[in-house]
Length: 160
Image (cartoon, rainbow, N blue to C red):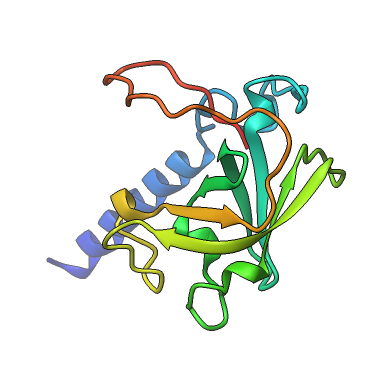
């Protein structure tokens, strides 16, 4: 390619990239600054079964209370960032009724089990990125009963 043709091609590519970058992206529903998000009543079902899972290593995620003394959460939430290792269960805190810094109940972890094949250092695979955390003391409140997985295309709501 001649130098003149290279410069023209480069100019066209640059203009295209600038045009694509300037075009407003259509946000997904519920995301972005103009989304119609609203707080929920954390004491009302099903939201009352959601808990905050946080580690003394600085990680925090959402979990769900599936029994008074059992929480289901993501395995990657229980990995210390500095070491890449799973934290000890006693260094995991579960906060029920969490709402913008306030909570109604607290429990520490007593034992945990990761999904089969979970690789904490790499954060996957996706199907194994779960952890079952047994609590040292039960938490009050309703639990979310486990149900069969919904079929493809079923509408869903994200809580957290």
